[in-house]
Length: 152
Image (tube, rainbow, N blue to C red):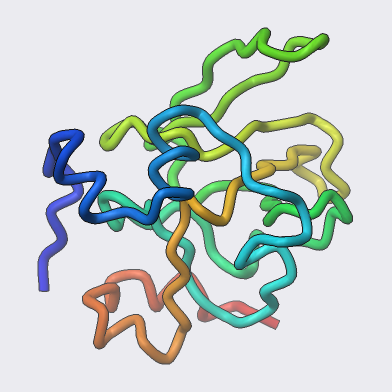
């Protein structure tokens, strides 16, 4: 099954497709509550995709426990699919992370990660959908199974 990551949705279509929280986070740059979101403590093997387009963004192998209350990753599957914007909404400057194709707000990136990348992609669960490894083929993501071949 070939995915159409390029499909553009109207605001009305997004309101039908997404929950109110997903809409607020992805379309209005909202932030969900820490430690009370779906994936902050998920340890299952699988793929995290853009909740709007379905485009793969992160793997479970890139996820780490950051104690911040949101899912955190040290890298992305494809850096070219991300857009970074300066965010001055709080008392300090942060870097917002958005998807290139669907232009949704994912969260923010920080340079305090514990791995060799030094990065911490602090994402909102509401901007993501998790596909368990055993469902990748059924969900049309068999092209991404190779990413898990060297998993320890």
